[in-house]
Image 1 (cartoon, rainbow, N blue to C red):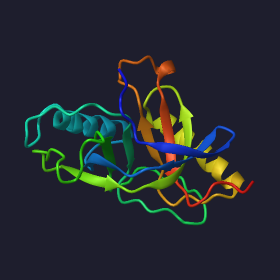
Image 2 (image 1 turned 90 degrees about the horizontal axis):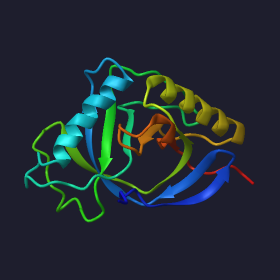
Image 3 (image 1 turned 60 degrees about the vertical axis):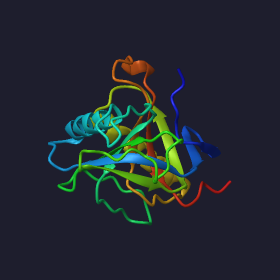
Length: 191
């Protein structure tokens, strides 16, 4: 069964890094500020959002699962001149599910949990590094650093905090999982 994903075009490929132009899409998003670490925040946020798509919304309706589930730092800013690696802070994490494209801001089911909100993600250019394996802090930090090094070597500046995207259910064997680290950029490398 095909799971809907955000629409994008690959604009440029530089080694293992894809530069993608994404179309706008809606997300259901929650912020987790009281978790001890990246892993705990991801688990808590996922549970909240899963309850929303399985009926804890104003219509009591089930919402089709989409991919990926994303997680990024809440309230973090980075320098515009170079990729910056940052550790989790007291600001916490944002976790989001893409809503199916049939929904607009006007017709998306409203969450009954006040910690969940619906938000429009604008179209954007991102640099993406794909990896397999477990959803751990260690993998997040490893691939975030690898993407930052690639951007720096290519002379490309990040304009957002890195985000991890998880495409597969937790029962998928780790070596088969599709995970990505993405960061918004203003350009792809010069040819």
